[in-house]
Length: 256
Length: 315
Ligand SMILES: Nc1ncnc2c1ncn2[C@@H]1O[C@H](COP(=O)(O)OP(=O)(O)OP(=O)(O)O)[C@@H](O)[C@H]1O
Ligand SMILES: [Mg+2]
Image: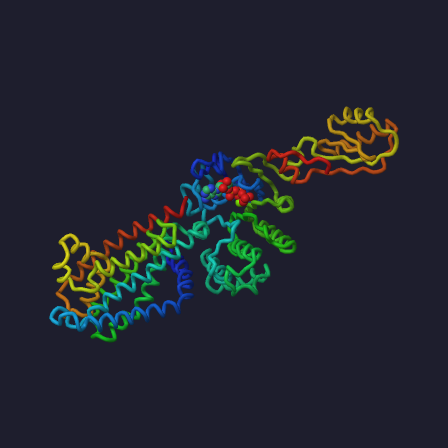
């Protein structure tokens, strides 16, 4: 594995990502606007004793969703390549399959990070700067959420050969990430409203795990204390699992 | 010189259909090897297996001793391919694509830029550097594709129909460039349907048909292998009848002798060795020869012959 090769591989993806920079800026702006509107509406509705400031409560969750959405765009690239036969070219290049896989995942990660940064910056500006430990946890959570979502999208895109289906899957995951996660409501509510098994699934999915970590780092006083290390460990397991799944499917479906 | 690419018992199936069907072939180090065959005969499929894009269904290919099935990473370091269909996404721009390619194959950031500019100028596509791939003409796309290999200069360079769609001037330029690559001690494989290209470039040729090798040799050897492939043409004066044709047929050991409007055509092998006997026979019979010409078979004829089509009459 040559890190420099992986950097070069993802450089191309970033060039392509950059071509959509205005679209991206518009998307970030829209997401931020959503965040404000949601927060303003719910601030008045949600009980103060449950969540003191809904805007601050929601922001870390939106940061997770943003990372998810941007990292997921790599899957679309992968599928376009498959459709246009470009993957033959990638397979012929003097690089190992592992380097190719890492290059693609890294590209998805960087996309996620670029997109998520404005949201995290917003949090850093609005709130007290976290401790060095907190910053480290935030960074790790970010790296893992973008890596796992990048892997997930690569896995999904090599499985389905149609753009429409790909978009459908993306919407479905989006939907799940929104409603079956702790982005919008605190865990106490989830525990109350959902059956036990579903509760376990909801709080242990990657989006929820990352959101919990961000909350613990930025707004510890607003959420019941959680074990950051345990959440990081769970996120690491997800990342490893999705990495193995994504890389296996990617190579298997590219090679014939 | 050793063997650069060794293909043994190669089979590639797509579903039940065998695109390559038990191919055996050695490509020598430092040669330009031409791969000929009708559409769908398995040329591209074979090349894609050498480039580790496809995996063999059965058999193996070794590139400088490295197997495509057991050590594909090593093979990829030695092989480069310019695809039949240029590989790019519509929103790619040629310059960025080539710079990226150069970096992947080992150029530094700055060297890549310099080398790409050079090759794009040489192929006269520098002016198109900023366009989208979707805006390029077919020939320009093809030039971008082959530029990749001239940047990469792999030990084994595979060109799949390199000059299809190129204009005459560029074709000759690309042929020169391919020959220059050979001078740099590279092994070159060229799949083509263009007989002029195969004749001009190839040290040796292989003709494949339905996934199998039908003929192998230098262009001259293959031409010699066509039975009665050479034509001696005599423009004659004087009496010529059935007895003359019979005598010639006997003297030259060929069935195929015919006469139309004072032009006598005799089909033989190795015409250059037989022309003297022919003239002698003619003069014995009192026929005066005004002019003689010998026509070797073209590669078209070689192609027709080995792929089962009939040798064309009356060239
Ligand atoms: N990915 C694939 N899936 C299914 N069939 C394929 C695939 N690739 C090639 N084939 C089939 O294999 C056969 C050989 O194709 P190939 O592209 O190797 O031919 P070729 O000799 O390069 O022809 P051409 O001169 O047209 O380029 C064809 O019948 C083709 O339809
Ligand atoms: Mg072909």
